[in-house]
Amino acid sequence: MDFDFDEPIDRLNTNCVKWDMLDKIYGVSPKDGIAMWVADMDFKAPPAVNATLQKMVSHGVHGYFGDDRAYKQSIISWMEKRHDWRVDPKWISTVHGLVAGTALCIQTYSEPGDSVILFTPVYHAFSRMVAANDREIVESELELRDGRYHMDLEALEGQLTGRERLVIFCSPHNPSGRVWSVEELKQLADFCARHDLILVSDEVHHDLVFPHASHTPMVNAAHKHLDRIVMLTAASKSFNLAGGMTGNAIIPDDDLRARFAKVHASVGTSPNKFGVMMTTAAYAFGEAWLEALVTYLDGNRQLMDEGLNAIPGVRSIPMDSTYLAWVDFSGTGMEAEEFTRRVEGTARVVGNHGPTFGKGGENFLRFNFATQRSRVEEAVARIQDAFRDLQ
Image (cartoon, rainbow, N blue to C red; front, side, top):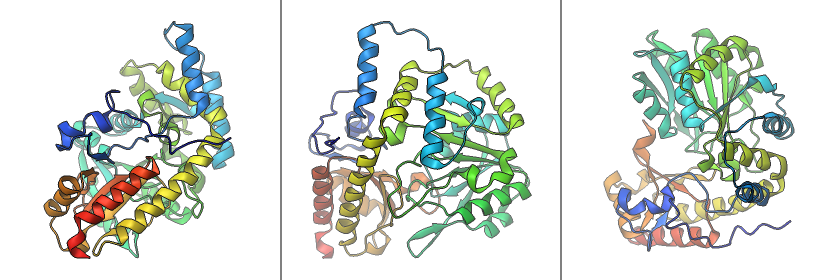
């Protein structure tokens, strides 16, 4: 089956954060600007997902969700087939998206005043949730060597105060698209075991891996440390279902799972029926769509990298996964205010500001290229023109 990712789709006036909030937040009109910030895609979801929603609308009754057997089986089947990971249904807890899942982990496995370790630069919602829950952030800055990020666990060991309770880890890494090796995952899990830390592994991008790379779930790499690992997964990034606000905390260890369940129950939430049904349909019938998507995104990645790397002093970090280009402007010699002004003010292209990702992000912008190729071409051309004086 052919899927048309080049189909133009107007998202204005659809209550879309990415486009409808562009002017309010960045001062760039969506009428002439290009939104490349929020991490959702400008593509329609797989046909089976939309057919499921249409069936629900036709039925017309939108009551409480119940009977999650098909939903959990779709997760189990997907993880085994795509990631060689055998999941027991009792391990799965449904959460209202993975940011909420992260907050629940912070509340479960630490107390106010405790510290949480982040490897920065990293997805900005992590630090937001840590701070909102009155925990301290320990930033372990990643080392950028030969275009790839590396953890420095030796340096981190020297930062520890004894108040640290958990690590929130991003695998694959957002914002750089780095896929971690099995050895790196083992080393991190061993580090957590030595220092009695709970390891929360956010793997929401695990399906969006390019052909040259291979993702390994943390539990597969570090199976001897299952007593301290929480896996966060979702279909939201893979199939563009973020509005369904549905994710999973998958916890193999009985004690960790019981502790999580107690806190989860205390907030009184139940699954979002629409998100659950979309997830079930995507995992059951969306594989061909996903394969086509990754091929299309890989083409956009190459276009983005080649175009931005052609600008003197600009470097797009080589990616293994995701649809988020992490672009270093330090070689231009410009301050962040200047290169951001050129990109947003002159080119009218909006990406995420690097400093929001923590230490190490000061000279970067993150661009979401999960959009129609013609728009990526236009964005690249505009950014090149905004730095024409460097050519």
